[in-house]
Length: 134
Image 1 (cartoon, rainbow, N blue to C red):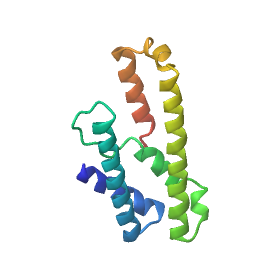
Image 2: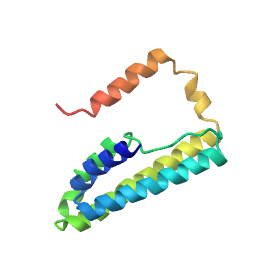
Image 3: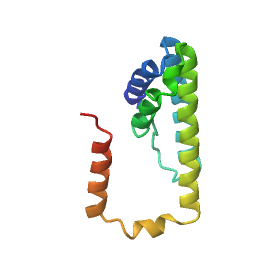
């Protein structure tokens, strides 16, 4: 968990225009959120002693936000970092709401009957290859 956390911060913060102070703040924030998620999982969730850490799932979208033309207009690296991190946080909040709505109203059962391992593996593979730049 700690290695993943440090790698994600080491990759993202310089791309977004941040320095060592911002990297330390990001590591501290990710550790705090991982602790809260672990406590919620053990107290409210399935009550299994699972340590929940950061994920690489948001790394590619965060990198694309950091390299977007809108973020390249900021000349001040500190301002660029703040705007990039705000854009990533906003996108994560909206994606979380969409995921919660899909799960709460049971829309996932409509999609799940069409998905078998034979259809999921090519979909995930093509999604990953589509994000890869040659």
